[in-house]
Length: 215
Length: 215
Image 1 (cartoon, rainbow over the protein chains, first blue to last red):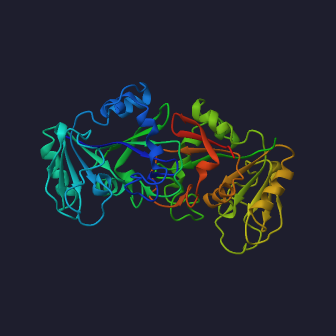
Image 2: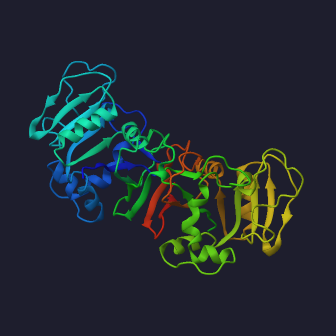
Image 3: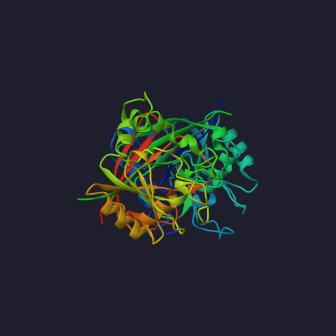
């Protein structure tokens, strides 16, 4: 059965998925880059980005699930780029260069229409202005039987969580403080009625928590 | 050297130390009681409260540090009782019955003066209206060389953390969601300059994190 999954959503000890002041220079906000030190230390994350080396172990095992069996993904427009408001031309094609590490169709939630973009390596970007449900429908169809990933950021995850549309979610607690920014869990009520915490594991550099939808 | 420590401060997956709507009937707010299921399952917590049974293991080991070497403690008035504003007489003597599980002097931060109370078993309650620093001075003197514990709640911990007066802190992430309430980490900036995350462990029922002050 096709599932909707979220993986490796990494928060600080104080609960922030990104620090304050997100911009082109600091995509994850001030201090936010440190959140993913655990992931960059793993073999599977490095491999995904064409880098050598990296550790195997608990963190690596969790990191490797991020792409396993994913056929399409969805993200908020702030995760795609720093431009706010209408797209200023077609120049911006994401943070990831000519060959982004997705290799599948990516649906981007936005209020501003824009033509789809085909990138190298099988990644395509599609801009959805008709809401989270329609984005999910399109991603489901495009995934060809594989699972759909909700990639982030905080607001996008919250929209899918509040509608109980995520079946399985892996989040990570990294040993840093950000003090301010975008919280992963904010304005979400009665999650406990729908989600069960099925796994809690300490990795080499971070803590891993897995949630499963039960209703 | 005498230290200031916090132990077993337990937050939900979404970061709340207590749920919404704290009252005499729900001291930890709606759903907040579930936070401490991990602690009540341990031998050392049960022993402290005169109960038999309980498990040994990782969670128990962390729970046992809560009282180890503590000679005095400090709490906010909301942790002591449900009364807000001036004390309405001297009837309320805490949530814990005639023989509270402290067995040492407890300093309670309040804006409203009240005479000290001697309880059975070595616990005494002292009401401090002159601020967090003076409460700490008094607790340090009363602890007779042992350590001082900052017991909670959220606001009290935040006041001591923001002044960098806590030397060591153990907090726990329990597998529940509260959705709303009092966050442990709120309005605290640049903690990363003063605190290092020195331990991250998965227990049987909860995750444990230990912070140490480095500056």
